[in-house]
Length: 120
Image 1 (tube, rainbow, N blue to C red):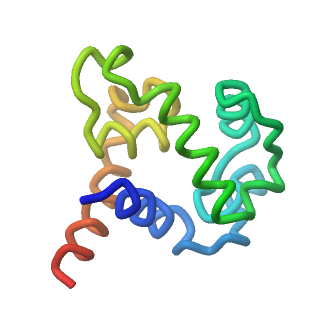
Image 2: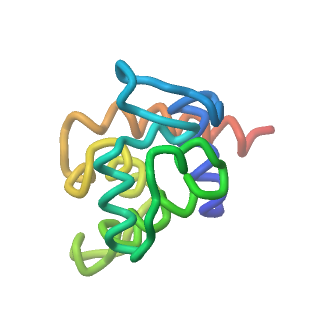
């Protein structure tokens, strides 16, 4: 599995890869369903000026996702190698999402998409 496969699987779970999607009563935006806090956090880490509008771009939403993961999905933070499960759960549950019980079901959904992609 490549990082691109993981991001695509997350997009499919979040919005069926719809770049114009709006969810969570208007608080989640774009194909990755990014929140304003997530975007600001990633922008601060990457020294960028991303806004909510950038969540409606495939390219910029991936950049935001990657900056967020570079900040939080690191061996230094987790104390071990980072797995695709960690990345998906951090995306879903915030910086400590990798250890939250509430993100396990989300990972199952992402994993199902990944397994489907591998078979086809």
